[in-house]
Length: 182
Image (cartoon, rainbow, N blue to C red; front, top):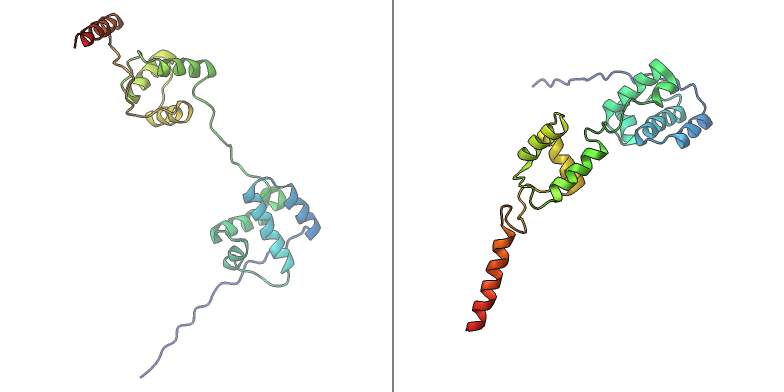
């Protein structure tokens, strides 16, 4: 019986020479505000501390506790642009608001008014588009109203929208007088 052993040859670890000193890297680490950028700098610190030894992306990922693909991207960034590339990001943050402060106030009045007659988010969306002349996705409006006004799709109203107040007072007067008879 013949046994065949497969030998897997792994690629060599990418050689990176960190040009900054450990003190400089520590300063960058203290100044970094974003957790992702801190991990990038920690990767460079680990590489610098183990300078003669080459670490693979998987070994670095285990030491820094992040994905090996991130390590690969960060190493390429450092090779291409140095510390400037590592310490910058292109995240823009939150999107600009579709609804101005004045429109927000109008929506708050419309939603808090018990006689407004809005049945659901579709009707609210139609009202917003006609009133403010803006186009908005249903999900955007839904999330906006949930976040800012704590709305829900099915909310029981305190009273009927088309209720006549005069008839209600007449019914209450009649029910009180009839209850005294018994």
